[in-house]
Image 1: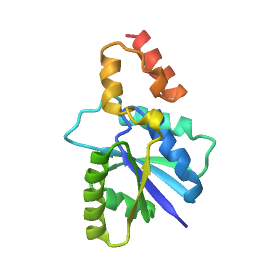
Image 2: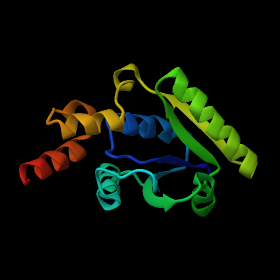
Image 3: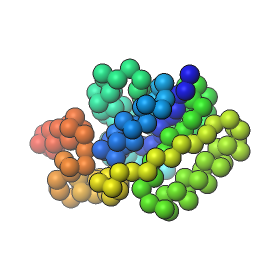
Length: 160
């Protein structure tokens, strides 16, 4: 069974994320979206919220599941039985950074391959960091987010 882990913070989940997942689906029997817990970052949205968004987006897709993990990504791969790590690449410098991580992961485990997907042109500028900045400054992010995420964020902003 070909299982891949798509790790990230998904804070928030963007159309760039879902584009990579959706295009990778034909290649894998199962895609596990791994919400990484990073002790050095304070997320804007809770793990529970990010997990709920992903579960709602992929509720009708049995090949996709989401988990929260802490520690090394390769250890999460072992836990979920993944032989592949899926990563999205926006720019050349993303590739250099991701290749260094892929090389390190392969050195640690020897049997986990990283698969890189380049972003479609319309999602190149869609980064969670930029989306968070726009949200914090009251801008409209609807064009960058899946409908369920956009509605959830809009409802949270209205209730404040």
